[in-house]
Length: 194
Image (cartoon, rainbow, N blue to C red; front, side, top):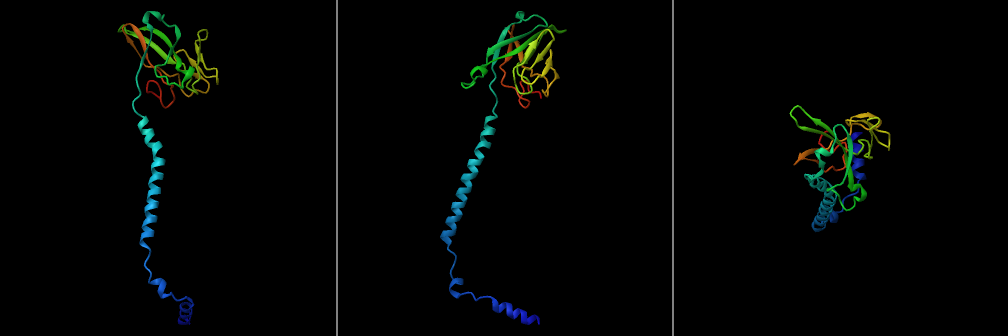
């Protein structure tokens, strides 16, 4: 019974013509198609990889520029002032946003007679809107979404996920200088702390 079925299946297959079985594959056409496929793959990889290479090249160290905010004597103790200046990091397309500022409060001298300043960026930590200082309440308030900060820049309420951004500052020849602030974000703060 089993031998009969095998005979039937074998006889059902058509015989292979001897002329097709003896023709060798076309080697030049296959190598040409392989070459074209490899070339297209290389070009596609290069086009897709260019943004990644650009990302890593753009992570070079940022230029550091210092802006003088004035003499130390210009800042009364425990008084918060807004100081505006043109950012030296400006680009031609920045427009009015290149005219930025910081909030400065002189906190007096410590035990070693070293001057202490609190320098905060004007940008809200939520979406970057410029905050306003209200000396009557001792609070910074963001007009965009209602973020509120204490006088020391810590978050008081609202949607901001953290306190205000602290700027890097120094005293050079009796003048307060601030490291020119870029637009701060949660991932790229001004002082490197998250």
